[in-house]
Structure formats: C-alpha cells, structure tokens
Image 1 (cartoon, rainbow, N blue to C red):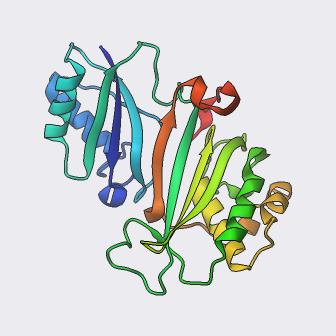
Image 2 (tube, rainbow, N blue to C red; image 1 turned 135 degrees about the horizontal axis):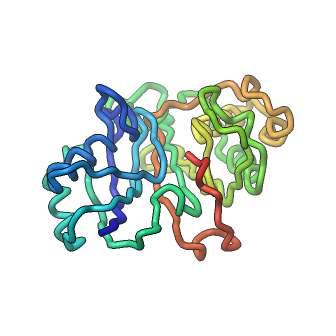
Length: 262
C-alpha cells in the first residue's frame, strides 16, 4: 500500500530531515521505525529537506509499505515508535503515483522572531532573535514586493546546486504577537531555494530597522548578488508550516514544478 503521512517535529536535535551517515535525522528515524514494522527496508520520500535546527508543523512524507495496515493503526504504530521530538499527525492511503515532493503544488513557511532586548533561554531554540528597533509596518510594506514571480538569486545560499532561481511567491505577511513579543513572518510559494526564507527574513529585519530602503527587495531582485543580501536568520526560528497538494489551494490553480524545490 502507498501512504501519505503528515508529521511535526522539533528540529533542534536533528541534523536535518535528510538521511546522513552517522547523523540523527528525521528521515532516518522514520525509516528505522518502518523497517522494524515491515521487517525489511522501507524508503521514505519527504516533501522537502529541512536543515539542522529547522522545525516542521506539517512535513509530509510518502512511502510504499509491503502490507496493508489501516491508516488509524499505522498512525498509532508509528507514534508508539517515535521519539519525543516527532509526532505523526495524520496517515492516509494515497494513489501509487503520489509523491510527497514531486506532487506538491506549494509550501508555506513561518518564521518567528523574538524581539526582547536579551535572548530568552526558553525561546532560543524556537525563535530567531532581533534586539534592535523594528517598525513592523515597514516590513509589511516590503513583503508585498515579494509577491509574484521573481529571480531569487540574491536570496539563494551559495551551497545550493539548483540553477533555476526563479520562484513564485503567492503571499508574504508579517504580524506582531504582542502577548509573546514576537514578530511572525509567513511565506507561501511554489517552492523555495536553499536558505531562501532565512535570507528573506534577515533582509526584512534590516528593512524594519531602517538599515535598508523599504523597497530594497526590488533592487536585490535586479542585482542578483547574494553578497548584497548579506545576512541569514538562524535556523531555530524557521518552521515548515504546510505543504499543499490540491490545485484549489494554489492561487490561480497553477501547479509548480516541485522537482527543484526545497
């Protein structure tokens, strides 16, 4: 049977999602559990690779299983074998041609920034930190310039191997959580380059602080120079919030070519 599974995890103690030799990874933990259940190797495909320290609220995986375990039982069985930093949220049968990565139409990332003067020890693993003056209205104006299709070369980390840097952003927002004194940014698009969201956040914070022009994103699209974007926000504040597979949830019903998306 072919399964689609939605899960959440605390990325703090993982060396990222993707299997790596001699490293604790989300994929490695999942494949180990499924292998014990099936008594043979089971390969898992993820919707994308999250880096070390990055969290997920709605990561999606798919896999073929050599047997027929009802989704409810698969959910209970997997959760009984998961460490405390992973939870299986949903399990469903799916078509054999469904692929967690290649079938994705879009993704939504969230980034949380703690705004206190000093680093909060209880937030440091789950937020970025920006102790300087911020005008959220400047960031809200700036993020509107991201909406649409652009060349994100200035926002792609040098470690990326993807040549095509053009991506479409459907929505980008900034809100203030006054109760927790946090800034929350969300980015919804058809795909994201390596470290792209973290670089966008670092740039947005400089705009909010007045170090950059409020429309500097437009200039950075044109110059196509990673060095001019400069900073990268910490992994700790980044969350893969949701992965979309239904055309109806994607603006305009446009499907993305997710084969090169992170």
